[in-house]
Length: 193
Image 1 (spheres, rainbow, N blue to C red):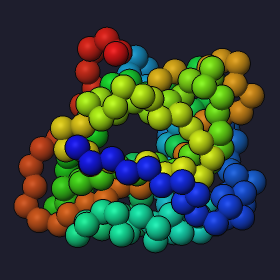
Image 2 (image 1 turned 90 degrees about the vertical axis):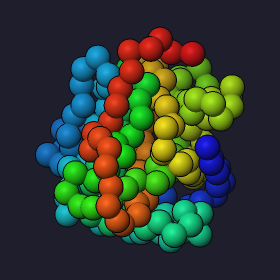
Image 3 (image 1 turned 120 degrees about the vertical axis):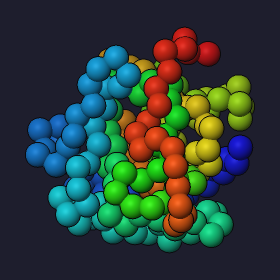
Image 4 (image 1 turned 90 degrees about the horizontal axis):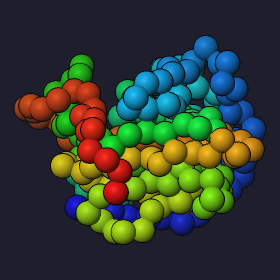
């Protein structure tokens, strides 16, 4: 498995503008994942995302382009874009979809950028199984890039005591060609490590 962590990933002014334009939980552009496998929000369509956040996503894509080999970013942001967890949110242990549901693309990388710091006692850390015993806690303007093939991962529960939602920008990298495999995430009922 390949994992890269990039500190100070984009211009801090772009990050601040994105945070200032970030939609509230009542925004019509959110899809709410709520059930036994997840409690989080994801943006529905790139055309609904606030302009300041699109500019930050574009800058983010430019920064990570040298870290994804011959893969490319999906600028339509299918299942990517803005992700948010309200206090109490989580994302269960899963593997990301292998194939795009609408195109002949195979996913190669999942990429997140944390918009703000979160104290360790608030949780919300990314756990990539097999990479490290350490959890990756949200640190402002830090990007995490990981190869998706056979990569189990989760986002641990975000504390009810947190004063703001956990916010990330998310991108996926793909390769074009004949593909097979699931077009949706594969969740496991295995207990957390």
